[in-house]
Amino acid sequence: MSRAQLAEKSLDTEALFERYHVGWKTRNPDLIASLHSEDTIFWVHDGAGPIRGREALRQHCVELFDRLEFRFEEGRLLYGSDFWVFEWLMVVDLTDTGGKPFTAKIEMLDVFTVNPAGEVTRKDVYVNGTQRVDAFTRAGLSASRN
Image 1 (cartoon, one colour):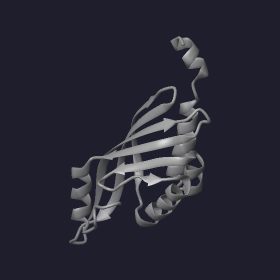
Image 2: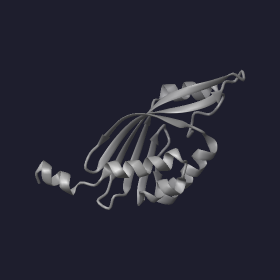
Image 3: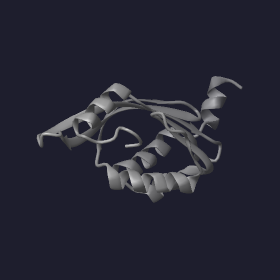
């Protein structure tokens, strides 16, 4: 298949990303989960294992949004016919153990795979571990699964 034919047949990953990103920016676990396949894999590479399945992902998002308030600084966004890659900074307002507020910025990289039905089948999240541990330790929080 030529590049032109592949481009014609490719999914609109840009439009899917836009819907998906709205779910994260509005902290909507139902929207996020609805864009994943039933057998999705969501894996934050922080030492924990993957989350498997749409409902488990939805519940993970509920718990994450209850536990942590964060926002995005968007970086590069690269699209392919069945994937996208998104570089971003997680920006979190925290308070250190001495009671002084600070803002942490943690580098993140998301890699998505999409099936022919237009569902996210896999999302791998790569975290700058040093920045994450430094920020959460400074705030007196556990760095695991935040």
